[in-house]
Length: 408
Ligand code: AMP
Image (cartoon, rainbow, N blue to C red; front, side):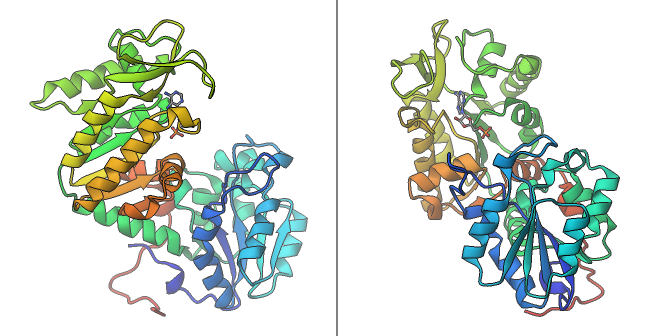
């Protein structure tokens, strides 16, 4: 168990807190959805109310180590200021003399948001010199960014390792408690539903998952690399050729046991181009015409997936079943969301991780009808695989023989 904010004396201390303010932005550059900001308010508020000067750091998007005005966290500082009563300041860098000066003059109860840490290459490279600069910003480190805890970056791994006191924020604590509890005593059958387009990051973990779950349902863009691996025509659908050998191996593993372990769509909605006005038809797997693109699972697949979901006692869902941002291609994702809710109502435990699946549930106003909505897609998948998260490992453990300063 990890120590949390509650276990440390915050009075008159400078707290450096890693948060996940990687929020979606609207076209005019404003915060389009402030869920992630709200999710970490309890930690910020608690630290400020208990006498800490709070320095916040986060990434936003993928600026690839370069300054990028459209990925500035300044808009987030404005939104944060609307959400808490404490003074919120912003500094347009995350290291350097100006930042040092602002932190020096930061009073207890005040909050300072630093500029996007990914404006520096040292962040994702976990560069020791960059980590050292970040670490100089506080005397207590707090990680409340579960969504990036699977990354060994400077702000999540390198910097905290340099602190004497490094603890979890409340959001991090809740994610670890719920997901850890779920994985410690899994009720079976345990079914993972995977979708989305990140072929490279998700297909790689399926092998590990096969050891942990009873069945894996695969939809979304990922499915087409499997079809190609099976020698089927996929037209212009999403494909990652690097993963063809692995997909072949996985299909072979799946068919080895008494019961099939991997379920793929048996039909697809296909279009000539991925746009709302495109001509659309439903075809069986293997019948995708050369110039067409698979954008959603169709009814027969939904029926099979739904049946498997309703047989499960534990369900983990990550990634949409189709290009759900475009309404005509959102049907498969919506029906899978409804199946998940139905299974939950029948007593199953359901966990949904990842921004897109959570967004789909929000669109359907079903977000409160699943057991747990996780703020981390990749992080929750890695926990599920049985991996240790670098951003969690580095935090202080509760020393069971030595009672912590419990202020509850
Ligand atoms: P991920 O970040 O891996 O969860 O992927 C989410 C994205 O996958 C969404 O933006 C979807 O539009 C996209 N997606 C889902 N199905 C497909 C598909 N069949 N072809 C291309 N993109 C897809």
